[in-house]
Image 1 (cartoon, rainbow, N blue to C red):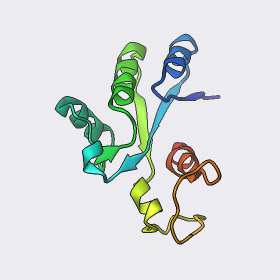
Image 2 (image 1 turned 90 degrees about the vertical axis):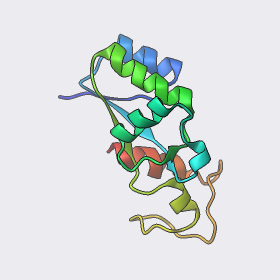
Image 3 (image 1 turned 60 degrees about the vertical axis):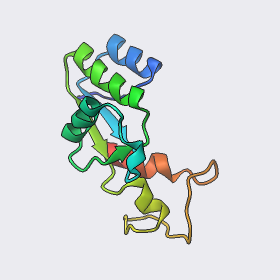
Image 4 (image 1 turned 120 degrees about the vertical axis):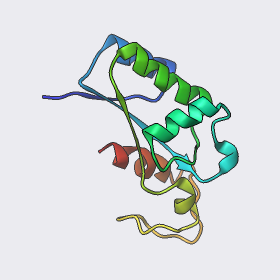
Length: 126
C-alpha cells in the first residue's frame, strides 16, 4: 500500500512530514488571477510557475510557498503541487461549469459555505 501526505506548509505539517515519512507528498494550492497576490520574490514566482504551469498568483502566503520548497529539499523527495483547474475567482464570479458545483448568484467562501477547501484543495488532491 502506498501512503500519501498532504502538506500545508505550516509548522505542524512540516514536522509531521519529516518525522513520519510517506511515499508521496502533495501540496494543494488555491490559485487566483489577482496579480497583486503574486509572490514578491522573482525566484519564488519562477519556482511556482515550474510547479504549476498555469500559475498566475496564489492565495497562499509567500512564506508558505517558500516553506514547501524548503521542505522538499529537506525531505529529499518531490512534493507534487496540485490545484483546481479553475481559479478561485472563477468560482466567485460563476465562470465555471465545475461538475457538481451548485450555481448561486454570488458565491463567497464563508463559515457556512466553505467550498474553497472542497473544490480548491480536496478534489485536486484526489
